[in-house]
Length: 160
Image (cartoon, rainbow, N blue to C red; front, side, top):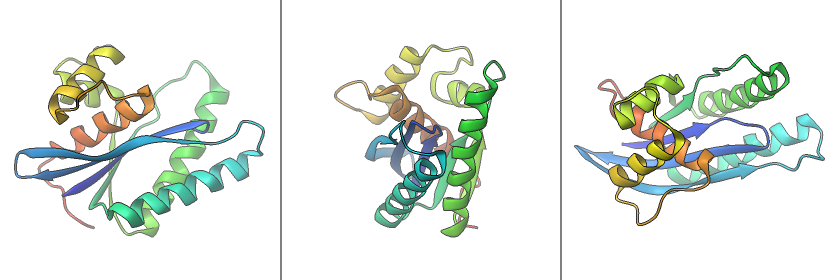
C-alpha cells in the first residue's frame, strides 16, 4: 500500500511517500513543494495543486494523509495553511483517493509514543522506522513522512 503524507503550508508543503507491505515500510520519496513568496496566493496554490497532482500520478498512492490545521496564535498563517489544506484535499478528491487526517498529537504519539515529542525526536524516530541513513530534512518533509507513518498504522486503509 502506497501512502502519500502531506504537511500543508503555502510557502513550503512537505511530502513523504512510503510503501507498506505487511509490517515492512519503505521510503519511496520525500521532500518539499515550495512556492515563491512574491507570487499571488492564487498562483502559489495553483503550483501546489499541480505538483501534488504530479506526485499522485507518479506514485499512485492508495491513501493521502494530511495533518489537520491546529494552531490559533497567528490567524494569517492559519488562513494560508487552511487554503493549502483545501488544495491538498481537492487533489486527493480529484484522484478519488482515500483521505486520512491526523492532529499533530496523533502523529507524534503514533511515531514516538509521546504526544509532546519535539521535532528532533520525531525526525529521529522517522529515521529509525524508515531505516534512513540520515535525518530526514527539511522539517516539513520529516513531518510529512511522520504523517504517512501514522496513516500506515491505521487498520482500515483502503481505496474509497
